[in-house]
Length: 175
Image (cartoon, rainbow, N blue to C red):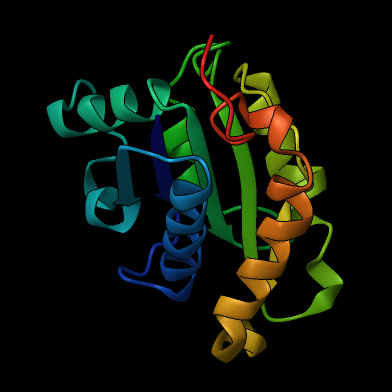
């Protein structure tokens, strides 16, 4: 099982990146993943509007071939960042068909808690991804509690709904 975290924060090695990577790592343990990839789009910001671009094409392939995608962004003007949007604009309709996605957004205020549900979830669904769990909104003032917040989210959204992630998550033998 391949889990990919892709982060559209224009600041490299951001808190959002650490949140997404931490979530992907927890998913990897629960889902018995043999491959975990964390992609920080900030490293490719200058090339985002260059077509074709070999490195971005490789990243697109990694994301589209993932089993589980953690798609993360900080809240910018009430929704996801332009960097994340520009990356997902590189895909055709249904370009993420067969991928199970988890929308993740970080923000400084609980006023933005619905941003991943009303902004990022519809984008992922438009691209053909399945989004079976609640989105994760991470309040950045609580970054010091990142482990506890992620553990609680995983417990109530992935462990409680393990069947949505296939037989591996249910500790059954694949058929």
